[in-house]
View 1: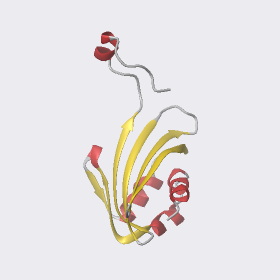
View 2: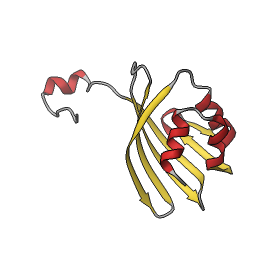
View 3: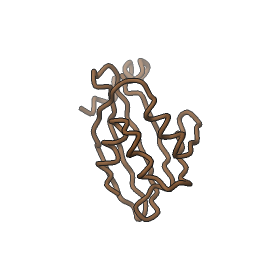
View 4: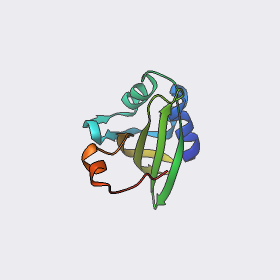
Length: 122
């Protein structure tokens, strides 16, 4: 599976292409919101999400039949910023399981800033 092409199609909300990356019986889980999707439901949730999106892959690790990705995602107007960590299990060249953890990007909480610890990554 071409992970770069997959993420390009996710970000461009390419409804026609997305299902082709998955086995029909694949399971997709968004743990932060306690949701599990079929392929059809995932494509609908991704493609019907409002707005136009862009992003970049920050990290890809291949672990046997699994692929780990970290992707920075944002609307094209840069009005928000998110990171998603995806654990993708492949069967052949198709996704059979995908577990994702989505997070809003933002400042460290006030209580940590008051401690004067840590520093920006970038």
